[in-house]
Image (cartoon, rainbow, N blue to C red; front, side, top):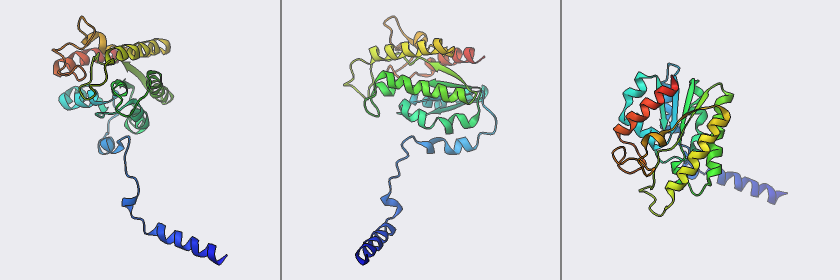
Length: 223
């Protein structure tokens, strides 16, 4: 009994010497990115745009589009749809918007967080729609920019094909559940079905000209 007591005391003493530096502090979903901005939202937005670097860059490059149309941008560069699902409550639900505009999946295909098959990526998008609907928020789905390569993942040789398959899933899901859809692929693609070179410098990220086309299409759907 005495031996057990001493072992227990020793374990407690060891635990007490652990500092905060010994504990994992990886904000995997990056909640901190919009923590301050979320606390400063005072007007119920018409829509929250949830996404990755495409949405992140959009807000940075054309903030007046968001401000003038009562939109909130909640994109984080590099994120996959799994990240988006995790932070969906804080960055979308808490604001009680009328719409949430979901644009994601390109980083899943690029394996930014490791391999994930397209069915599970679509499952993440569907989960966001279901969470939104449960909170009386209308989902607006978006097809991805029709990229044919990712500059940060040169080993990926079938991006165009994977984007086409996932976009088909998104379209089918939107039709099945009567959700609004913004077909960015149709708007940005050239005759070969990939992003027009005058709308993007790397096939994935639109430039301002590309965003202006996207803005016009999005506003038409939100109105």
